[in-house]
Length: 280
Length: 144
Image 1 (cartoon, each protein chain N blue to C red):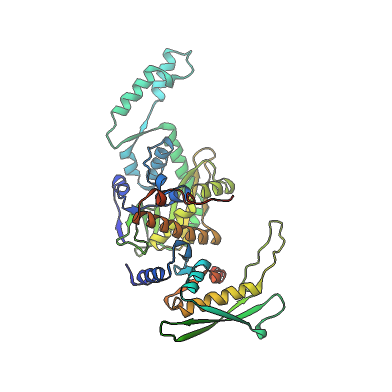
Image 2: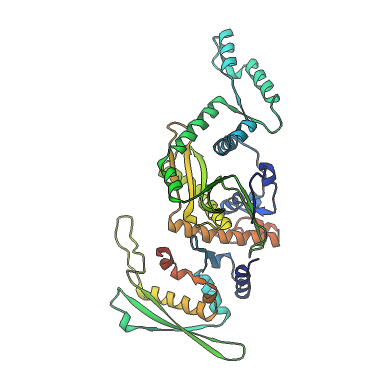
């Protein structure tokens, strides 16, 4: 296994020969065709990226994300034109914002003051969570690795190579003992997170990471943090049945990807049930 | 590829096992063969299995022990047999309940039979010696 501590984001994501957790999840949700599609950054993705970076490396966060402070310009606009309802829709505001965005370096992204504030509250909510403290206490570790990249150095029995980049690893003597994954969500309650968990196939993500890193699946933890008031945090792991089901499905998906790699046709890259009648 | 993966690859190729037929144990890491995998192995090697109830270890509908005798003929016509046991009782079967708490019936004879069969088949084909187990034993693994 190749372990790279500071692999840039773009370089990590450019390693298309290596199967990632996102690819596996997309195949499970739909097909290899959809998993292979490129997607553009959405505001939610940018927020998630900013949050992860803030949690893991404050210096890197301030290098990459610049807070767009607009309170003053809004106050100025309102002073001049007190009758308007939406100062952010004015030409003056848009021109100010445009000037700000043009001043950013190529690898910099702007985030709003409100988002910055939310991220700080989320961070405090997470670090003060008792469940998370319990994870740290239960797993005897002498190091913490944030955003380390792992690339398999030889194909597995399916002929596939893998890459993972866990948000945080608790490490003892260079061996990972627990995996933490930050999840920003609207609602961290059991009912809502369970729905997100199976909808976005977090079960497969956990199985995949643990499989690649050789960590037992019950040592994978999702830290669900609400991105809006009241900014609660809850920690989740996988039940035994979910672990077994996820490992079983992971193998089926690896087999599917392997068959497509050997014979990349529409038949191997399409829906799993494309060539048969499915009874619901 | 590691020696362990090589062995698995060879066995998977020999028996035409696909991703549906095996998976890795989530916490202990060994390989588990699913029921479809055991059936494929049996069909490929033309293994026949006969069963005997072990009366001393069988009691009413609660506790059952079955002996499975797997037989396989190799390319030279030599006959190999392996005996293995499977048991099912409230100690080694999870008690399943409905949402309103009603206990669902359990089938000790059928459960013991499939456990005995899977063990005998994996033993006679050498999977056991490679540290590969069957799905039908996974209730035991879950509790270990």
